Image (cartoon, rainbow, N blue to C red):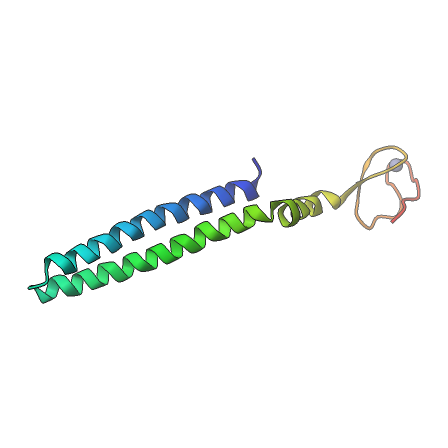
Length: 115
Ligand SMILES: [Zn+2]
């Protein structure tokens, strides 16, 4: 598992946890408002908890959605980025030695490298 895959998994896990906490807080807030209809402090507390819960749900959805979006483009963007990391190292066609990008002549066998 590479770093991109790992980060994606962490992001999705965090998003789902946040989503669950948000839903629980939202339900808790609504219950506080419903049960404490005679107590203004319960209503205020319920609104605060409910708004925080709603924010948690939204952020959780964004996190989960973003991690899914990254997964959806895995074949194009993620693979391309991985390829860029490896493309920087070229192999000499003559001796197979690793040569850095932009180097014209192989350090090992002095073969003239094509760009
Ligand atoms: Zn060479």
